[in-house]
Image (tube, rainbow, N blue to C red; front, side, top):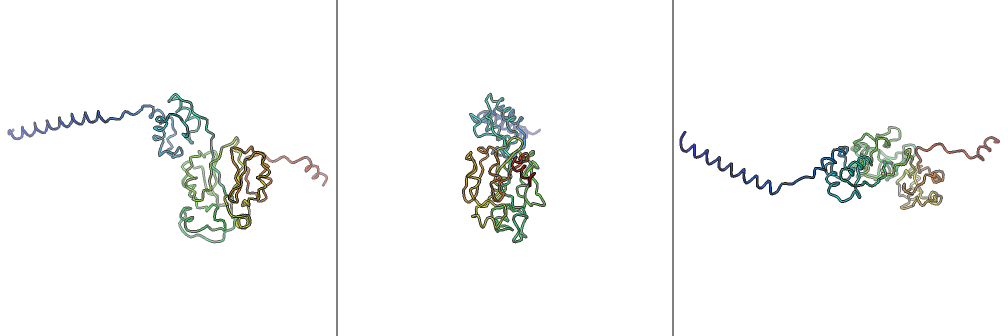
Length: 287
């Protein structure tokens, strides 16, 4: 072997050795020691990576839980209280109790109640359709029925009803991740407090037009007549922008507003049949 080759090999070896030493000290200087509890919390999270917690993924949420001093404003809607309790146990904290939520559709404008007055032949996308025109009916606030919310749901908790042309939410599968809420360009989906036996009372309308135009566009539109507001003894109902709204946290499910509503825009779900009053029964018998 010639002396030139030997010198070259030795020079390269020394250069590699020096580089390795420099890289070692740089790595030691700037190394980041990750909290092992992040991995532990990530293991108890549902790995849905749905973003319902407000973070890009479960890993980011785990990092935030470890970094934060409390669980204030932090919740995994998919895992619920069980998962948050497990995460709190790892961190030696106590998880606050967060009421579970469920999505509801604030529109009941089926073809029966809200007749079609025009036809849309563009892309089957709610956002595109909403940006182009008011919709196929005279209600510019109602559901467009093109299924953006259904496509956004990663939990198969929604489907389009071919008869009503409205999305249907399957309560048992809904995890309240909020993806459908973000997908709807008309803000027709709300996450409400999930009550026992999945009972719900809410105004299934978002039409902010005055009573006459709203009713002409849809037979079950809220006309802001204030009858529900007046009958509610618990301050759960407010009227704003020609529209009634029921606060799920204040509603006691007395159901008085439902029968008071002249347009049937207030929906009650999963309640037992109403009891027939004795007087009415007597009249029926005598009549």
